Structures are given as structure tokens and as C-alpha cells.
Amino acid sequence: MKQRNQFKSLSLMRTRITLRLTAMTAMLLVLVSVPLHAAVAAPQSEPHPMLSLQTVPHAKSFKRIAIVIDDFGNAMTGTEEMLKLPFPFTVAVMPFMPSTKADAENAHRLGHDVIVHMPMEPNKGKREWLGPGAITTDLSDAEIRKRVEAAIDNVPYAVGMNNHMGSKATSDERVMRIVLTVCKERGLFFLDSRTSYKTVVPKVAAEIGIPLLSNHVFLDDVYSTSHISKQIGEVYKQLQLTEHCVAIGHVGPPGKKTAAVLLQSTPTLRENAIIVKLSELIRGPSDEQILP
Image (cartoon, rainbow, N blue to C red; front, side, top):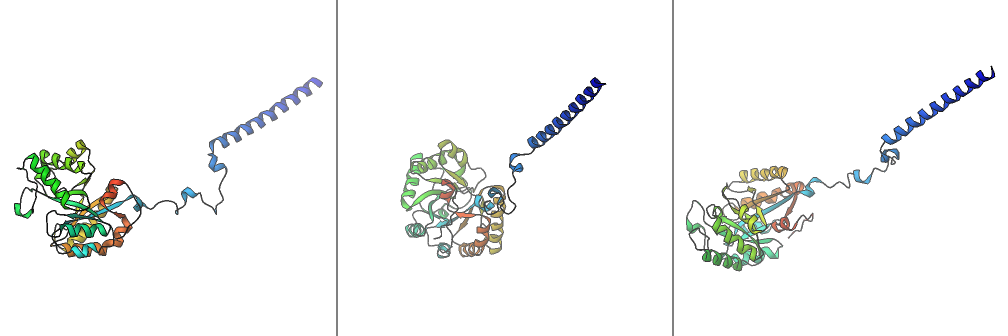
């Protein structure tokens, strides 16, 4: 009888120990399955700083718009209006023209980038439209080099170069290898205006190792306010696809209209991206708007 009671006591004790061990195991499993940061909850009144809306950068901080205005150098219509725009941009100046030096110096003084707007042979059009010192595909290697070097020397403060017209020249590998080699030697980047879908500039630039940018949108290929405004919309579309957008406008026939649309669009442009000079796309991002 006594032994039977002892057996019951031992069985009861074993049952209690088993239950306790089971409960402890369950608690350990729960603790292991809960992430450490959830086990120690932060007070609701002080959200985690990494999740605070104040510390999450706005999407526009990663987007850049670079406006380039071509055809400076000949005292063209809209020059004054463009230089009054309240944001930094890039002034493309044609060499060997009446106001080449004055336009380049004024742009530099206002804090804008200056690049050489190099006249190059198109597939269609008259050669006299190109202006002096143009690069054509019938020139010798030595003459192409001579003209590119002279153009760079003629435009003060130039930090880069882009093509004026040039659908034929930018499709010619021999020509562009010389042009881009000279630019690299002189420390200039190149902007491919992309006047031809047959351009060889990206291929040659990669082989030479020169900093290269490409145009995305022509703002005023049609000389009307409605079209220019529509093209601003294309800039926004491009920013949905890429981190930056290069857009080219002009002084001359559309100059005043383009300047007016850009001025009117400035607040919206700044809501969508940071407006920068081309050289800032080469150097890397900067969130500061440096106004002239």
C-alpha cells in the first residue's frame, strides 16, 4: 500500500515536471520567433527615426534636369531673356561668331556652364547654315583636329562641347574619333545632341574614355508655345524612366517663347527634380540650387 502511494506521488511529480517543461519550451519558441526589435517596442509617441517622414528624402532629390540652350554667339533673339532665367543651365556657344566671347563671358559670370556648340555637317541642309569653322566629313584628319582646337580656344570658359546639327558627322566614326580625342585632351566632356539615330558617339566615347552625356528632349523643334509646353511634359515622362533628363532649347526664332515657357514652368520643374548644369551630371549629384 505504501509502495503504491509512493508510485502515485512519483507519477504526479513527473506529470507536473513535464507540463512545466512543455510550457517553458513553448515560451522559448515564441520568443525565438519574435524579432528582437519587436520584443522591445518603442514608445508610440516617438516613431523610429528611420521611418520618420521628415528623414525620408523626397523622390526629387534623386532626379536631375539639365537644360541646355543652343545657338548663343550671334546675338540671337531671346538671348537676354534666357540669361535672366532663375536657375542654372548650360549655354552652348557657337565659335567664331559676332557675340561668341560676350555671350560666353556673360554666361560664366552668371554661374552657368559654357560649352562649345560645334557646327557639324548634317545629312540635309545648306553648308552656309553651319557657320565658320564647321566640321564636315570631307576634311582631312589634320584639318578636323585643327578646327576643333581652334573652336575650343575661341569660346572662353568652355567645359564641354555639343554638336550643332551634325546628323552626318556624328554618324562618321573617323570624324568623331578625332573630335572626341581633342575634347579629351583638352579636358572637355561631350554632349551628344542626338540629331541622328545612327550616331556613333556613344561607341567612340566609350572606347576613348571621355565623359559623355546624351540629349533626351528637344524643347522647341517646333516654334510654338503649345509645342514647347508639351515638350516640358516629355521631360517629366523621361524622369519616370531615368534619374536625369537633358533637354535642349534654342535662342533664335523660338528663343523668347522657349524662355517664357521655361520661366513659367520653373516652379513645377523644381517640384519634380533638381535643376542642374551639365557639369553637375558629370561630377555627381548635388541637392543645392545655385541661382545666378
